Image 1 (cartoon, rainbow, N blue to C red):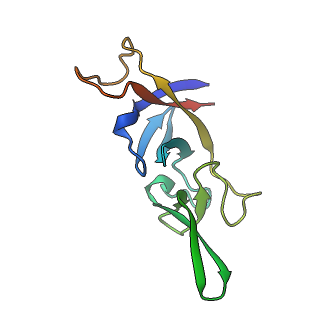
Image 2: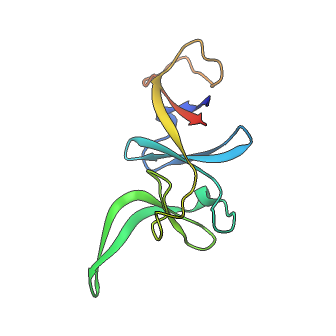
Length: 135
């Protein structure tokens, strides 16, 4: 399993994403309300760049003509055909037991001043890094 520093936490605020190339794979890293998730940037349907899609909530209809949006910011919609995936686990919204996009572990770790794999600056308020773990 490879460990890859993506960016400083301060560079990826809530609601934002960063698409990176890691070990020959395009992977999107998302900040969902302060928690970080990563999924493969390839829709399992037709290979679209999934991580370029809209991030939205889950639209539910508890009764006719009444809609409720839950889990705002947790659902990724494919830009080509609208397939939806749960960012927290990669599972399809429509068929979660059969269709999924590869998801990856992401951790937040203290910054190591000796880590030269990221660009550093003289002044820093947050000293934590977003780290992607590819297995």
